[in-house]
Amino acid sequence: MSIQQRIRDKHLKLDQEKLDRVRRLLGAKTERAAIEQSLELVLSEEELNQLLRELKGQGSIKKIFR
Image 1 (tube, rainbow, N blue to C red):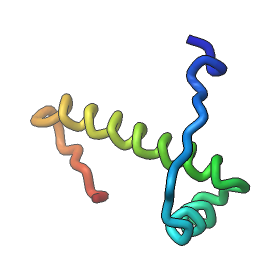
Image 2: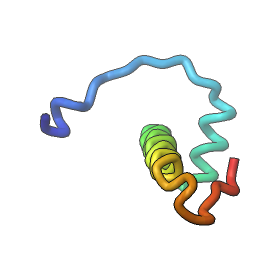
Image 3: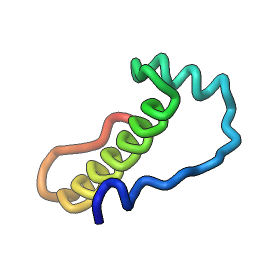
């Protein structure tokens, strides 16, 4: 599936203060970029969590954030 096929228009009601804060924290130039980066962060965290679950009991790696 190409990126063009994956992109969909979404109409969302979002908390503007949260969106502004996230945009500043991530250094995103646009609201869309802030949302995209936030989604990437969540997906990356899940990948790390999966790796930690797989490594459990095989060493001394542990999650120290959140």
